[in-house]
Each structure stands twice: as structure tokens, then as C-alpha cells.
Length: 75
Image 1 (cartoon, rainbow, N blue to C red):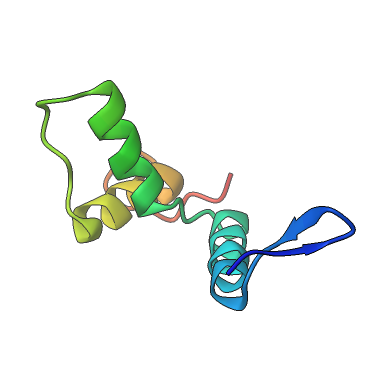
Image 2: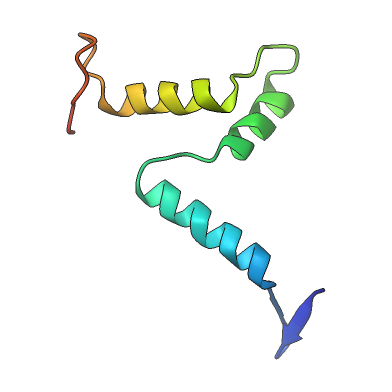
């Protein structure tokens, strides 16, 4: 159910919770899997899509690995 206050749409608690969760994940460097899937389907049809576990590992490696396979890169 959509509510309006002073003409502005107010999200329900479920929608607000998803938004807060997504924002917290992005602040910690964890991208949103659903956004990735939507992007792949829209821009790369017919190409394989990683499952959620593969996606998480790939993103963590991209963020923290230093190319030597040892990981633990800070910046």
C-alpha cells in the first residue's frame, strides 16, 4: 500500500528495510546481486550469469586481492 504525506510517496516498512540493507551493504563494499543480474540480462543477453556465491567471491577478490592470490589488499 502506497502512502502519501504532503504529496510525497512514503515507502512501506519492507521497502524501507530493503533500502537500508542495500545502502549498508554498498557502504561496506558489497554490491547488490539483484542489480548485477538485472544489468547482465539487460546488457549482456545470452551470456552466463554468476550465481550469488560466485558473485560474492568475485567481488571480494576484486576488492581485496593484490593479484598474487594472497589477498589482503587495503587500498
